[in-house]
Amino acid sequence: MPIMNPKKNPMPSQDPGVRRRNFGEVALGYTEEMALDEAQRCLNCKNRPCVSGCPVGIEIPDFIQKVKTGEFEEAYRIITASSSLPAVCGRVCPQETQCEGKCVRGIKGEPVGIGRLERYVADRHNARTDVKMEPVPANGHRVAVIGSGPAGLTCAGDLARRGYDVTVYEALHTAGGVLVYGIPEFRLPKAIVAKEIETLKALGVKIEVNTVVGRTVSVDELMRNEHYEAVFIGSGAGLPRFMKIAGENLKGVYSANEFLTRVNLMKAYLPGSPTPIQHAKRVAVVGGGNVAMDAARSAMRLGAEEVFIIYRRSLEELPARREEVEHAMEEGIEFRLLNNPIEIMGDENGFVRGMKVIRMELGEPDASGRRSPVEIPDSEYELVCDCVIMAIGTSPNPLIKSTTEGLEVNRRGGIVVEEATGKTSLEGVYAGGDAVTGAATVILAMGAGKTAAQAIDDYIRSK
Image 1 (tube, rainbow, N blue to C red):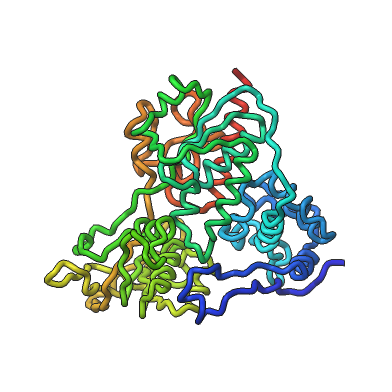
Image 2: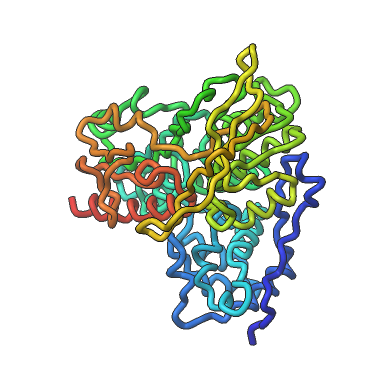
């Protein structure tokens, strides 16, 4: 019989007063006892609504049933039949709006902790040294993948499992894409990402770092000179957006992309790091998504005395994961909701000294039902700060489109693809993830990589 406790097993975590000053992982993970207990809450529904909420189609009830009986390696096998990055997804996937959002247990209580169980199974597997991945027999066909973020790694992993000779080309010196440069260590330890990548390498995936496709080599050259039969573009959304208000060029204004890359990839928080970063005292982060939470919480860990989230809508409209918002609040981040910056002010030396902010209210709903924020007249005030981080979104990397003739893009710079296949306007070229949609979630990028891998397999087989 299932355990009918209406609440999921809480996640052990660092004390907020301690973790706000270190980069150690906040969530500590389930124990075996907690995982077994949480698995017993699953009703093993016949219609399996949780699976429909998973962008990569993990057979969730099946893996949870294996956890119930203590067959953890079999649970891992079921997960990895659909997901190439289970330890990552167990940490950063927004389960509350996806698989857990469709869990029947959530109707009269809390859903089953699917993400927490996935993390436990993956971490348990990764901690073992006696489990080895075996490469699949080669099928004689070659595919190139551009970008080693979640879309590229998923596409590469799925193709490698089908026997393809896959090479991933990464522009930076470390593989992982947004998983290593965008998401902080306290939310996703980089050793976890490295372990997942080593698993893919064991399957036969090759990774070439320091290779900027569009500069070092073009998409056309990969197919014409290197004889790849298909190419997948998963180059991400690395072009930061700004508000185009006065003062954005002042010293102490960062895009969240730059700020987090310096912290996460370049380890600017470590003593003696050669990468410069401002250790500000009062930091204003503009935006309300997960990236804004990551930037604000990183600034606190760098020693800021006060950190503000400036967001023009209310708490109900805040797009960040509930867990990340709660963690930020616990760590002392101050939320200035229904506020919007109109100017960044500088001192005589060109450094940030503050920000002019105007208060907002929610107007009438638009066609989609979302209420647009409207400025309240004569409500401006000045917020004293010495650092501003813009976390209002990013656009797809423009390099690929500008160097690939015939590649169709939309007005926002996203590569145009067939939704069902990821096929672009070029023969044999596919794309997915943030390079298509703009900045989105890790799991949606993985879903796009999985879709494209299937389409590439179909395309090459048809030839």
